[in-house]
Image 1 (cartoon, rainbow, N blue to C red):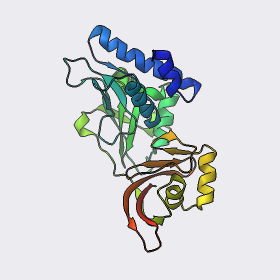
Image 2: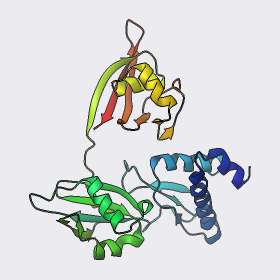
Image 3: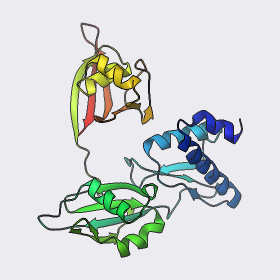
Image 4: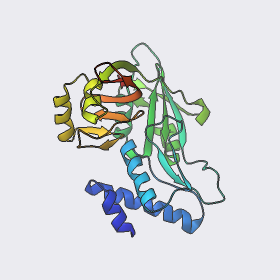
Length: 261
């Protein structure tokens, strides 16, 4: 299949075509110049589409996703020529410190501040918020801008400095562990257990397009769910099926789910 056919097969929305074309072009850039080439930051859904694009095109090596740390949600896609084992300098790491009793900031506060400065969302990776600071993964071209221009978020003053990758402070994810049983490992059954819904209501949400499985929209209530799968429901949050146990006496399947809070 040619480029346009592959992209048309994978794209789900009109804007997906442009994104996939840019990713394809980055791979071509790496091959022509024989130097590493990186995309902007991709959401988990966009990463899945990128993987589908590369697999369909028969590109199974010579690239890596990087968000600065292993569990990163937003990541760049780096294409590497044969001579390069890993890319260096494709990410910048910064820390915005804030102090004082009234200086608590949320992820939304910090992201809103950056958007207010005209920073495009795709140039910023994860924002890791701690009690008195936030670590930001960003495109290298923003390094000097952040150091020079980002002095506050709302009324809270920020002191921004550059840090190393190894200095990132990654907060522990807040989750609620749910141990339940499901009639089966269908998406509607597991989603019902994860979000305290009736199975019928879970099916309605899936069919209305409000549910994603492993970051991709899924409209099929009977889609099989396996251990490690991530289920997101618009307006309700995100959960991960962490363990599938045995059958109960009533023939139901024991499941352990972590719901992010």
